[in-house]
Length: 267
Image 1 (tube, rainbow, N blue to C red):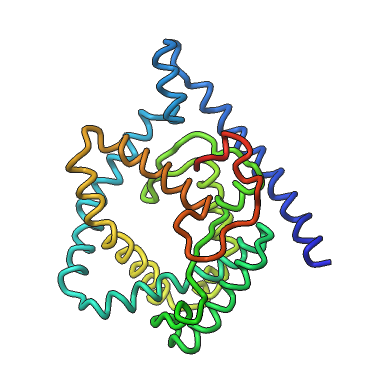
Image 2 (cartoon, one colour):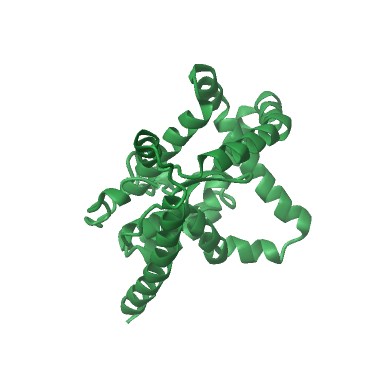
């Protein structure tokens, strides 16, 4: 009965999200240039809002230059390596409740079981998640979001967009972020916590993630003729890997129909 109800819920979510994604695609198509060559370039990049996207990208880069990258450099230089490892484990740990929700929404019961056991083990034996005791017990980490869940329901990615502060996205992923916020049990736990605790958890997660991107992004910027286009390409590849669970330590997705259409091969 529970699985039947979840399937009905998944169907309803799929239908609603599909309408939103198609609307995004239609909006993007309305801005396509008239020149056939320019139109082909835009379609290949799936970036019909490129001028606006580049403007937001530049603002995000300014924020990163002034705030995020300096914070990540300070974290790299002054946080001892054992401390970085504890933070990394904790940041991954707090994503598990949302991963479990999305595994269930995808019908991935084996992966949901692995994530649930990992959450239980690391919450207790890992002292609240700062120590990874679960991997050694055969419970590897994996992460899912609602954008990936929508991909399993054949929802098209929609146009590429750059979100203020959040960065690269497709409309499917952007919609998924909103749903993730509402589905994530951590959202409601932090809502009851002091403001300082909420900001602290979010800040630690952001700084840790930016620290781990210091080298890759610096190298990408240094070696790219067009940094915006390089980030766009890298994001598309990363989302494809995430949706297909390539490099995922946990059990691969059993859903064989995720990529039956070319629209679902990215985003």
